[in-house]
Image 1 (cartoon, rainbow, N blue to C red):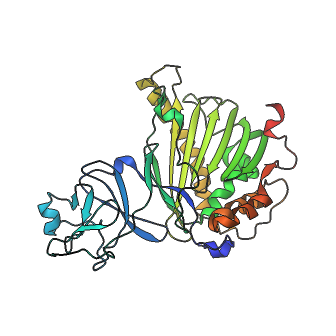
Image 2 (spheres, rainbow, N blue to C red; image 1 turned 120 degrees about the horizontal axis):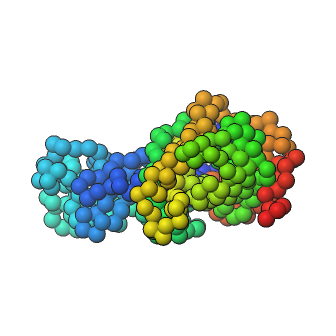
Image 3 (cartoon, one colour; image 1 turned 135 degrees about the vertical axis):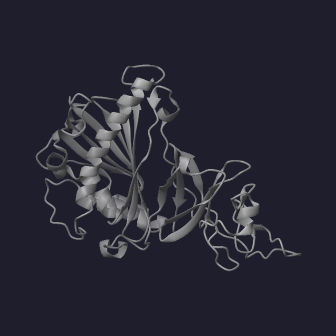
Amino acid sequence: MATTKDYRLGEFTYPRGWFMIAESCELNTHRPLAVRFFGMDFALYRGRTSSQVVLLDAYCPHMKTHLAAPNKTSYVVQDGMGTNLEGDGIRCPYHGWRFGPDGKCDDIPYHEGAIPAAACVKSWTVVESLGAVWVWHDPEGGAPEWEHPSLPQWSDPAWVHPKWDHLGVLNQHQQEVIDNICDYGHLSPIHGSTVARFENEFKGHLAIQRQCGGHRTLVSADGVSAELHTITTYNGPGCLMSDLTGMYEAVMLITNTPVEDGTVKVWHALVVKSPTGSAVATPADAVSAAHFQEMALTAFVQDMEVWNHKAPCLNGLFIPSDGAFMKARVWLKQFYNPRVKKNEYLEQCEGVYVPRGIPPYTQSQ
């Protein structure tokens, strides 16, 4: 397992950006969820009063008790009817200190007088979107630099909402996943693609891949394949969105969130427009969409199977026909370094790049 330092990405161990940390349906008002990302433990829960999602650092400042670890024996939990959630806050199961969604302790049941200012835990910026919970992570503690992941299709009743596929923890650094955005050479051997045109563009926090061609994995239920056009965009380092047209109109979502330095948790989903052209997606549309998501997942698992067994690519033997690997790696560095250095990296990578020997995607657009 290689680390951020091994890849020489920058000053920070974990990058700046929006990252998925849970599926919305995993949260309820009955219990908190203990999660771990960026080498840290968190308490994630849905407030009982407002239903807002809250993410706090996990450990109570009093005696370092985990606020969200499973607990059935504490009377804080038993008297709370099986939960230590109270209103929009959460009580420590050890001594009953209560913390609000802002992370500040607002009640110590056995204490009279002022609550110490240090009695607080960090509260993180989180939003719900696309059936998922997203956190803004920034080693410098700054406000979000761009909007959280969203899609206008999500509010259109003609589009089928997906389930999220939970793919677990990949024992590879995020770098290995993001390399895929420019990896022209793997498309035919891994996915059976016949690529007619391909190009990359790097622009600000976006890394874009445009390509079209046949595909042996993404096929309809009767095995028919069409020329597939994909415009795939990393919105920062944690969320990939791919607009697919050809057989169905769909948007593929792939998210990866660092767990430890050198591992990421991965999710996948597919939002599909009604194949029958209905203004409101029908049950039959949902069946077709589920099949297409299964095929899309099969295609992604083809990548995952390789990633699970490869050594870290710290100094790849890249050739001009591979794609813009080195530009993509420079693009990624902006998120692992202070914001004031961002333009230093963008000046080295922004632009459109085409692998040697293949027409650019935009040539006939």
